[in-house]
Length: 149
Image 1 (spheres, one colour):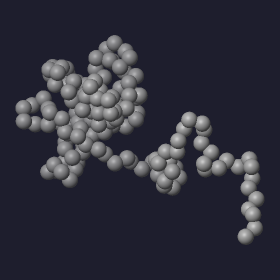
Image 2 (image 1 turned 90 degrees about the horizontal axis):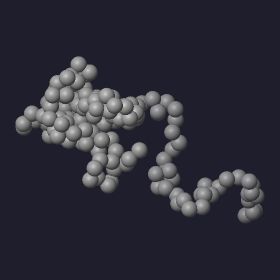
Image 3 (image 1 turned 45 degrees about the vertical axis):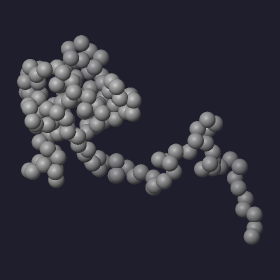
Image 4 (image 1 turned 60 degrees about the vertical axis):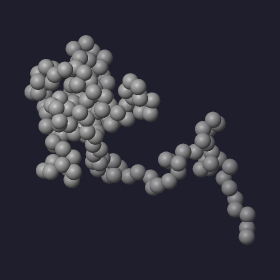
């Protein structure tokens, strides 16, 4: 067998900057294609105690854009007070498709419901907002496993 000539300037797969280790997330799979980026991400759902006794809110994960909007709104005065309620509006669905009878995963609130949500107990709406944040990988008080961006 002849010795293969290696290009000394070619970056090897094993060239990892000092202090970093290879991540199993990046070491497997095929490279992403642009057309795959346009496909809708699968929805994830969680249930949280609702505002009505014996009923639950079925919450779906949100897009990066929704969370950026929430994060930016959290910096203003009036917008900050309403930011959590907007997360509830965008995340609450009619149920989990395939689990809840007749559910299609359709968002059930819109901005016209803001007044209704404003009248609810803060403790209850705050619990729903925390469930939404946790579902979306954000850190909430008392939770050290989630991400905080």
